[in-house]
Length: 114
Length: 116
Image (cartoon, rainbow over all chains, first blue to last red; front, side, top):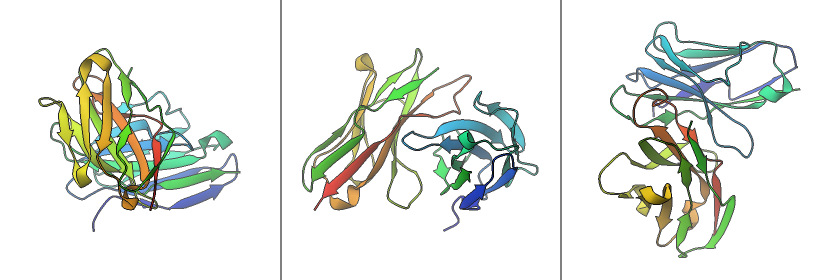
């Protein structure tokens, strides 16, 4: 099953450290999305790529967050100077580029900031 | 901006009972509506979606949802639940065009526990 793959599955870090997550979408999908989910909440949109272009960013994405998709394939999400409030599940999803195509989600990276 | 309300946080049913999970959204324009499901230990997956046309939408595993525009609602239903339906269910909406049309706004989710 070549679904959306996210690494690592879990990340524990100390406050103030930088962390980077990776997402490998389904190979033929040229749209890629990042969402964040905290306990008791639904996923919240962070950002969206069409190929290598980052087309939309949520106001949730502070300047400590940066996402890239350099070759239009895998994507990375970096959080600098982590804070305890960054603790969450970070979800990646991908889709084809047609009208309202179905999103395929990965299993997420669980970040715990101590 | 869109918002989604799911009024039930946790629903507990016996097998064969009927299910209805409420979802209401707030948005001033035309929307697309979705139900996603997350089974224990698995990733989010699409259950069903509504874009236009027949407001009664049928999805996988016997689920259906009805879009009632006047009530801004998109409730999920299943006539007879099974133990395997135990999962968390999320209602989601996006604008059907324009800015934000690639952003899904999710509700907080409803946990369904089905007792054998």
